Length: 65
Image (cartoon, rainbow, N blue to C red; front, side, top):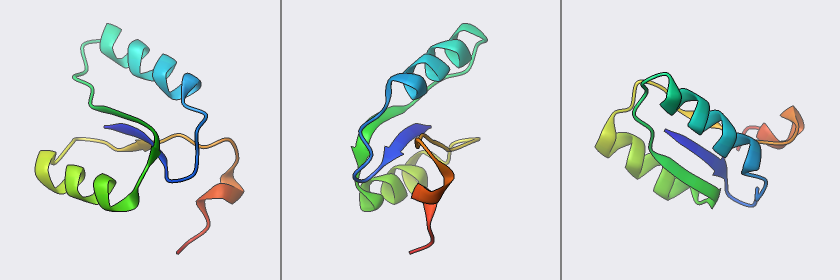
């Protein structure tokens, strides 16, 4: 599962990564840009993905909440 956290709108790199994974046989759930944390949590709980990838521009954007 791939998503950009809430407030983050730069999803082009994440989309390219998703396409590369798909090319290698991965099934992809792409939530896209500006994904609310509630939506992210509900989708993870419902789908139980093998991996969750969050796309951000810099590590400082992943400050704990």
